[in-house]
Image (cartoon, rainbow, N blue to C red; front, side):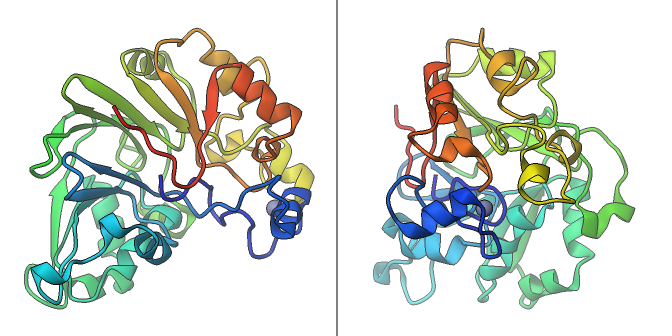
Length: 298
Ligand SMILES: [Zn+2]
């Protein structure tokens, strides 16, 4: 995980909430986090990005495994492809940062592709022939991540296209929002940084996994609106809050086989403060709170 924060990061540029303030003071109570970015590799040489964060340039420069090598000529990258789980700006802006005439392979649903192609900025990725290769992914149908040996199954989630493209939405299940199940050598990892509802189907998927990386955006439904008046409730913007009888921690209490990890944590979430009651409650319930640099190895 090269970034573990929700949109805006921690601290967020225009936020002086208690947690952002604590983070800026640098006491260590709240660790800074870049915006969400996961990377996976089958061999440690060639890498796939799961979405592409607005912080991607910093994430590449801070991690040698993602950097070009002089052995392979002047222009090269170990990044073999990018899997998009939605058209949200926080998940796709990083793609525009990779435009410097570099051939890219993007895996996305038909609707996410159409949404991005309708945006003129993305034409910068098609300035030369074969710069951009789209691979259409279909909810429920496994596909191979290049030659990595990793199989990836898109899991359809409720969710609509982001505000900037809402008129393009077709309401087809899973076209606008996906989770991913990654498999290699009988090991399974679920990557679901945005969970609008914990359905029986999703619980069943989680039960079959060795590790689950789950939406940790908000601790409570009212947290965002309590911190910033006029902002929406967690559930209304597609995130099950972590606390409460109908929160993620309670609803997944009996999913006890996989390693359980929260990712995509908003700067308002009190769980970010390692000494807090909320952090302790998450850990005591068997969850890890991912930080930038967190790794899942065999
Ligand atoms: Zn804040």
